[in-house]
Length: 121
Image (cartoon, rainbow, N blue to C red; front, side):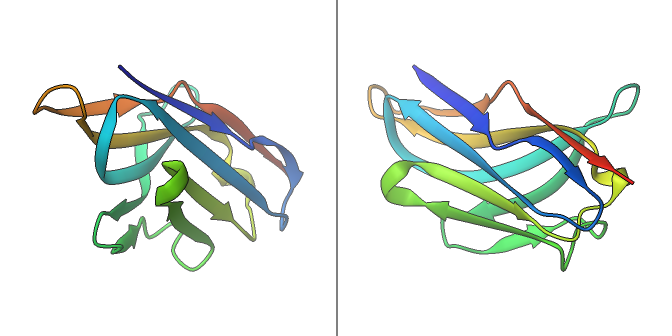
């Protein structure tokens, strides 16, 4: 029904930048909200950034001023621009979207499989 696929992860040195993408496909009528989470091994998944359909964004304190979430509604894609990366930003980054299906009057909570971000010192 709906699939989310992250891309753009990789290895970067501290102070560098990466841009993550998450493309949604399937029976999509609209997307209400999109979020980015990350998880390091042995740690809980934590929320990083979010954007709602009105365009309002919010960020975790740990990334505020360094990360920017944006979207391209025509492509059903959300981005996370990550600048001034730190080793503590290392983890698997997941996108999440609240999607209204085109087939039935239903809102669903969908997750991608994640993309690895590694920041070396």
